[in-house]
Picture 1 (cartoon, protein in one colour):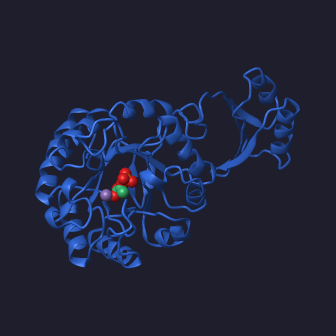
Picture 2 (picture 1 turned 135 degrees about the vertical axis):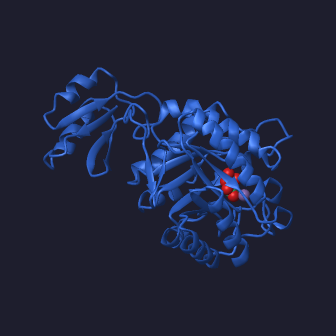
Picture 3 (picture 1 turned 180 degrees about the vertical axis):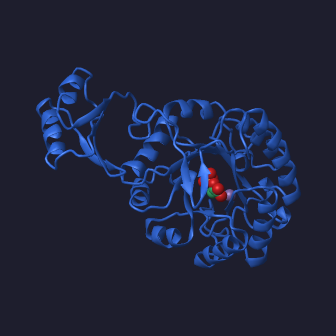
Amino acid sequence: MIIVLKPDAPVEAAAEVIDLLDTAEVESHLVVDQGREVVIAPGAPSELVAMVAGHGSVERVVKTGGPAMLVSSAYSPMRTVIDVSGVSVGGDTFVVIAGPCAVEGRDQILEVAHAVKRHGARMLRGDAFKPRTSPYSFQGLGESALKLLADAREETGLPFVAEVLDTRDVELVAGYADMIRVGTRNMSNYPLLRELGRQPKPVLLKRGRTATLDEWLSAAEYVYGSGNPNVVLVERGIRTFEPSTRNTLDISAIPSVKRKTHLPVLVDPSHAAGDSGLVPALARAALAAGADGLIVDVHPDPSTALVDGDQALEPSQFGDLMSQLRSIAAALGLSL
Ligand code: PEP
Ligand code: MN
């Protein structure tokens, strides 16, 4: 149950509602959503709705099942559109974010930023901190990469998203990036999610590689409930028994999770496939299945990439993909 207080509720109202729930032995949590006090009572039985709704400072009571509360469609039936430095994510435009897995140097990031901009990408991706399976693999250039991304933004006008791995780096990454990404390995890093909830930059939250939809939405709830409602989900493939692709893109997750949540949902066909030859088909499928956009790996010369070269499109291949997506988007009444 979610209890939304009236905007002009007196200061004591939340405590009174919590007392009512306490008396019924129901645990509750007070959160503030965009300036409005909201009491979350996950285990409240529906018989309590009338009692709580009768309190004079309660605007509405939302009955919810499942772990998603503030991120649930029940709480907010309208789809959320998130503003990322002037780019709308989740509206009538299918948003394409593109760029290399990692920033490798000045020429590389500037060249690819100009190329993806020319082909219609709305945002740039590129990481400064890489979560590598081996501690001996390239780990990213750190702050100097963030500076290069900021230069690329300056030259192209494209906002950028970069990954943060560690709570200690949130302030640093937020100081440069327009949007902060949580990778699949950190989807369940609850202290990191809370920290991202306490800062204002929008968050791109990848699905954990073994996470169910409800676990993924609970991770989003950590960010949202800590004070940051600007969360975008990314389906990036899950681990299955099938070894022929890096991960298995869960296409059914797109309409399923969109039924459960009001947050925008993007797809990463690159990390799902692990193979650039498969990326266009998965990207087209994601658009057709109702995703709000893509995050795609593009590298000026994939054969020399320090990270994830096998799955990166060359700029011209990215241009071809964008033309295909434009036709599908037009048929769906979306722009690109
Ligand atoms: C990435 O986008 O470069 C990345 C590491 O993705 P994921 O966390 O989905 O593996
Ligand atoms: Mn990568």
